[in-house]
Length: 416
Length: 203
Picture 1 (cartoon, each protein chain N blue to C red):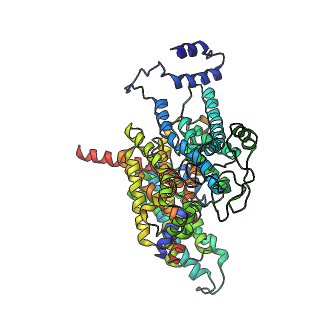
Picture 2 (picture 1 turned 120 degrees about the horizontal axis):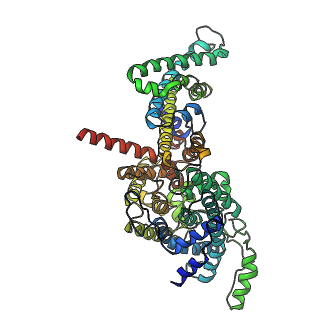
Picture 3 (picture 1 turned 180 degrees about the vertical axis):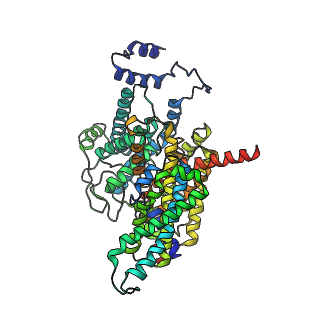
């Protein structure tokens, strides 16, 4: 209880310094469940409050974080033809990944939480820790080389327009993390689409291009590794001949499944050693996170299952149509590519923006699956569909709920 | 199939409200509840679906050089289009007043104002500039109307939902509706660029 005593001692005066008190309150409730309970109305009282729920979601993402940061390094070394085995140069790869992911993580949180703290102090209520999950999600859905000022801008847009304008946590209509990504996608498309952006630290994704190491790699890590007697980053390395950095989806949209298997094996795609957004690649780890969320009852299995069914159904229908090579990709292999599982586990199940009735959830998930597959396969402008499909259905979720409720009311009126 | 493509494209890919931002005044004003939005949406589908083919006939047989008058009367296009739209709206108004007086009163001034709803005039002008055939203009009218209908009931459901949210006082009502329209436009951009016709052609 030493921590509790310490926290009690440093509690700032609420009247004298409201901003400091908000800050303090945010960290205090992070460490301990607050002592205050709602007194009027009927409420279920449970230790599993909003903050605890969000922490569980963040926990479910940790495997993606670990693999994601490792994969940043791995893809980089594959591109320059060093340590190409998955476990070779383990330490160097994870260090490189951390050098890339930590600034992204920090900028996201400093900007997002900063805005959140500001609004909490301004409106005079406790911090609504709604940014915990969005803040953990945003780094995972960005490419590793995203310029930090663009990231900061997109987080600002998403938090202010997407959330604070609607009145704060739990009231937003569109998923905050996806809104941040869609902002980058439409405002700075070259930083988040194409073949060039998914592998970190290269001047260009073509044979012979130089590597692009910053101050940290050359002046801190290399001397340190040298002192420890290990080999560091090779500053003279160049990209191997014939390397393009294309993602499986990029290949599939040009040449179908054959073009994909010529470069990547199915195992490789399933386990995630492919270029892509930071956290989306490793399917088994994402599924493990999804199972955790379903087991403790935070994410809705209805949304996940129906989204899987919708996507499978649409992919199968497109197989039958078969007008382009991409449509002919066997339907089950569509799941090996891109970010389907990540979107299913962490994005579509967001309880705030999803439909809230049970019937509504089935419809909502199924339509996400269908729309996402349509955008992925049939829209030549966009390589991947889940981000846009989920935003699209976020818009219609209140409408679905409205009609589900209406039909329930009518059913009961008839029965009475 | 061709007609179906045009319908889909007008409804989703090139949605009149969320891609072209046409017909905003009634879109923002009548979207407070799903019920009235539903009624107005149906009225717009009807008016678009009817005026489009009539206007097509007018451009083809009255205003063009090959028409009955034998001279180029396209300078009369705008005024004739508006006259047709106004009379159709009058028709819809009479029907709604007869069938559902409750809806009639809740729509109020916005029902006759469909006349100046730019989505409808815009639809007719798109039809002329894109040189649609008769069948295509019917499909475009119904598709555009359906897209408008979908957009207005979606925003109405959202606005019903955010009525319980702690929206900052300065943004309540119209301000929020504008932000919502922008965000919905962002979401609808997912389908922008899909060309069903091109997909058929590649086979």
